Length: 99
Image 1: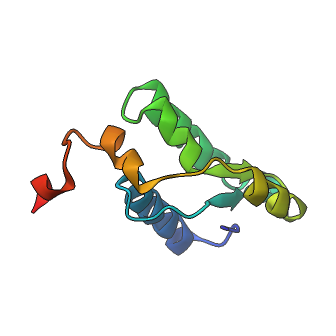
Image 2: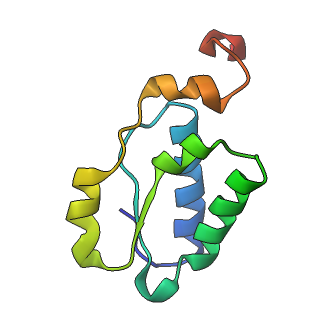
């Protein structure tokens, strides 16, 4: 879960998304968008998909909620992310290609 805090939090969100995209992390990511704080991040992620820098399936990596009260419901209903999802996240078929 991410709350509006500052620039370190932005770096941590993007780092976690990268690790999730590569199949290293499979945890649920909930971003609490209090008062629209993360609207620019949401727009950037949507643009990445629209401009084909990310696949539409990547939108399953995160969930935005507007209120802290919605976090538990979001966790329960968040799409599952499998380590096998790296197959569409990177152009290689086998993770050993990186070694």
